[in-house]
Image (cartoon, rainbow, N blue to C red; front, top):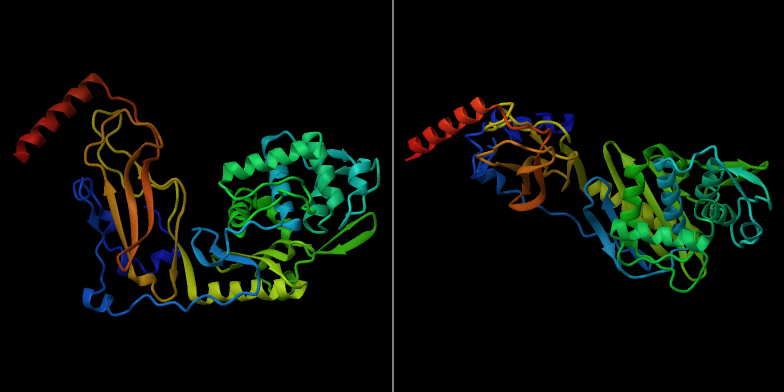
Length: 407
């Protein structure tokens, strides 16, 4: 079994004996992993966290990137005009096109008259300019260029309306249930809206799926055609742990900001919508981030794709089956309560071949003071085919003998 370094430090206290888990010990009934903390002492410390700060914004949300745990929110499901926060989805769609091989960073797009005429913030491309996709992406992310956004939309989908359909399809796939896009740049138009919660879903997906491109969101300036423009995210200069994400502003939307910061191994995402100024959106996001980092901590308990248990498998070509998690298991807990975590592992008693990789054969359950904070399926990490006739007959006899002993 593989554990993270952070979790290993507390291993003697939290999960003594986990490495020695056997198929018999983890039969159908779950077995709690022993803790060295006496029950009387463990019950003394209560989980207490100060209330979230009051934020001067129409809507806000703060969450842990790894676990998705919400640490603070207000009006997070209120549908609001997103202004240039729209461009997070614009870039996400383009990144997916690149990932699929249908588009490349060194491809070039031709600037249309419509794109050139688009009002608002600009990258300052000219009609019929042939611009590399990589430059257009930086023009969108750093300069918030509406002309660059429309150019990308037209190049990817043929026209902006079709691109908006792609945006909405991705929103639906991600579970952004209160979002609808009408354009690629975020300029005001009816039926173009999203929520702080939906933006948090999108931002998590973008950072997780495209870390190789996320670096652009921390870039403080970009120069195109000898015109240098600054990133409008003031937190990039004020807080060295902030590395994104996107600003937005229209009269209807107010001043908005999606921010993300990484301190040690913990990443938080904060979103404020509808503040009164550029400074205010930075201050309110900073307040949320400071609150989250001050009163919570995030830890990786288990590494994904690594065997946590290797129980007996019957009638297969192999005698044991490695079981693990599909991805890393993180938890978010109030500070100073990490040692109060308890882990329970359930492993099915009788596993019989054939088995397909990904089949579920148990679960990992993590609780804090009796409250479940994480529950993940324990899955087969590889396939095991049926064994030979001799193996199947032998195992059948052994199983019959076990049943007889049970009686």
